[in-house]
Length: 246
Image 1: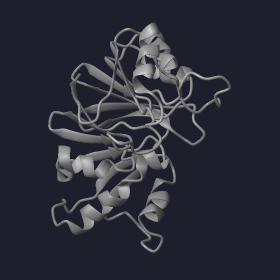
Image 2: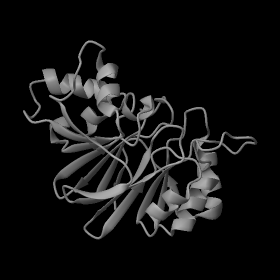
Image 3: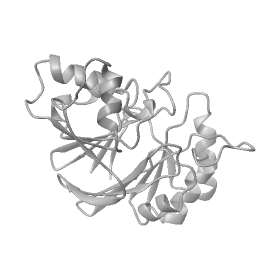
Image 4: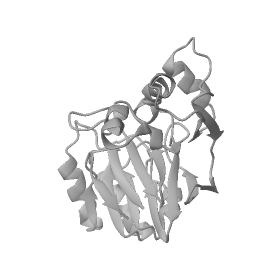
């Protein structure tokens, strides 16, 4: 399994990376996890959009889904896309939300995406076994575990402290975890993890490796990493355009 970080900036595009977007490849199958704002341009630089076999959206906040709009433009007008719709897995209501993001008069995205609403569960997608769990976030959001070839990757999406995410990640080879909150008093509950909390989740789940991601441009990423390593030494920062073999 190969993971390419298309975008890893938290909450908004940053000066060195677009917002959340990750490409996971296995046995010739390409799955995009999230398409946050600014990510489509980086996807063009790192992969051929025509090779994308499916898209998974953890939730419908702009920094995780808004670049579905340029993907639609490319699919409709580039002359390079396949004639079949791309499977898109996302929370209930994604088709309506994304059609409005593209343009209020457009009305439908069915020519580009075959949308499947998701919830907690397990299903097969190409070579992957996909399992999901609801996270601690103000809107409906699902962490995802991808298993193939005896290896596993878990992506948290956005979450505050969550036993469900720990359970989903148990024994995974890699945990790709958000760490958007700096250590500070009176943080809003059920929204994001601190660096230390990301490390605690990795330790509790017994994962092999932790990749810290979704750090906003206004939060010091090295400080987030240092806090995670205090409780889980096998942690590192996800970097824009970095490639990881799992």
